[in-house]
Length: 240
Image (cartoon, rainbow, N blue to C red):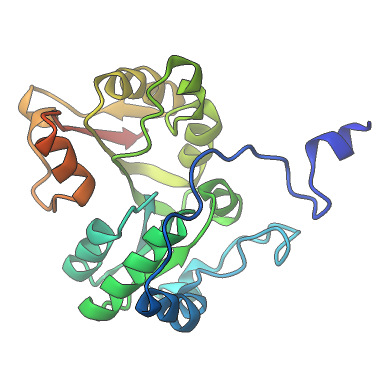
């Protein structure tokens, strides 16, 4: 088999293994309505390979005129993303999340909060990285990512070269990258890998990773961790 056939989809997309759930239990009727009525209007533009095979960069100025752009990777149920959008109306926020139940939850929260400075990519963030202009994002969030606890699955974590190199490419110099996790080994891998890909850790003392950020809102994933006795860590990096 040729390299082209073995490494690329017929659309031209590279083969990218995806691990994790795309859909959970059945959606409520209201959530189906949110997906049918709201999701297309909240698209950041042509992200997928089928609609953008040339990987033309998104026009972020047209999307968010005069605004900084922030990115949330894997927004879960969307509570943090909506909170940040409401607190920062002068910022445009793009979220990527392949789990459609989480996307539906976010859409419901957007309706309730009436925020307009959000866009949603319901898919793999690597496809979004392809079309975000280089050096265009001012802040990124990775909050309670899938821990992939088994050692043989650590290469599936976000804090690996495949993801971090792409993230570094779309962040502006000086951009902030926040990571929250309750998994000690994820902390270890984050502190090992992120500085290798163009970031510096900003902690000066223990409170800088033990205490949440001043604008933090605790997510349902964090509340579950606390109930189960796990300790959150809040890591802040800067793109150099």
